[in-house]
Length: 228
Image 1 (cartoon, rainbow, N blue to C red):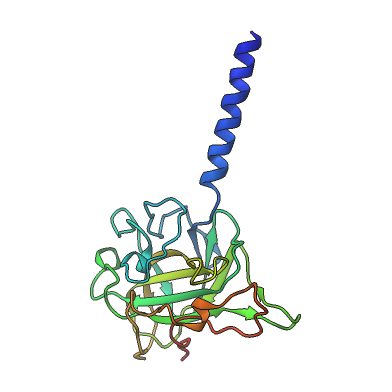
Image 2 (tube, rainbow, N blue to C red; image 1 turned 90 degrees about the vertical axis):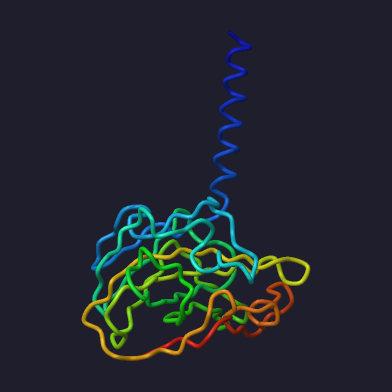
């Protein structure tokens, strides 16, 4: 009986360690619209790399994450000018900026691979009011669909860039998810776009920044935020 109990305790400890390792990072897995939080991966494409980050700046995985496709993901209708929220399974804790991008699909969002143009609609950068960088580390990130963009299907992409492993000794980490939405009640604006991959480079100050070396300013990588 003693040996059996010991084995049981060891098994429980091993299981606990495994669960802890799996939960080591964070995944943006839920979308909220009109004040309602939707199901896990109901409108967000599920990736296949669990919670590992994307680090290759030339990879198509930078669009929506590894293995994330429209198959099995629903698309939700949202009004231009309305707010939405991305929620993580575990609060974000790696220092670094968070951004939200959109890309208009040529047809349905479910069939779109994100190879078209992307425009940025929100940045959470660094706050230096206390004399040192402070980041928006949270489990929820809320932003607004631009009121002037055309109606249609879009990929709505959130990206958190962990810069806790400074380049070049380390590699910054991208944590990414894409939701599928249909925008209604919009306008006719034509936001300037960038390609992903291609929007982020190893020479970007916001990519090479060292948070351990007296950082006094910070520029979020990627294009400027589009506003109506």
